[in-house]
Image (spheres, rainbow, N blue to C red):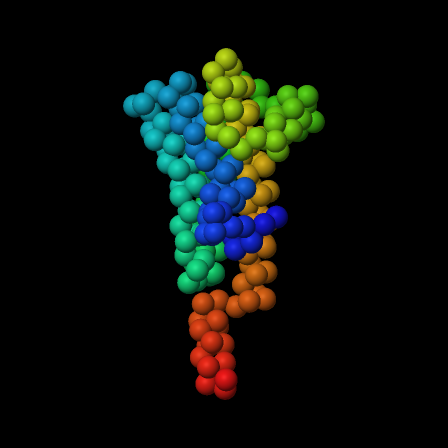
Length: 185
């Protein structure tokens, strides 16, 4: 798992190269597609699901940006992203349960196939194309699998960032090292 500072995009650090961000974009785009197709805009759930998906994505961006000055804030924001996506996962499970639809079991052929797809693709258009010819039960299950994968990715990412903070210190520690080196240099 790559950390925020281990991937360079065109000579600049970029959150867009993070797998957790790429998956969050897919989840947001597919959730938006799902809600527009299957949930009445007047239903509070419509806005809540889209906002939970958006919050997951946006908090990764904000955490990444804040990591340059505060790992503590960044880690908090990554955990907020994780919480928002957990909330969205529960919304999809509620959607299936309240409509008498079936959630794929972890060992089912559909779940295994979707996990494989989820590991191979990070492009939203791929998932939107898949969703176009599928019903609400299938798309909700697709998102449950993607959200479960995203949670594992975020847990690993947060642990790696926490370890990097432990080893390297935060912004203040780095400034202190620079000042001491200059003073002693």
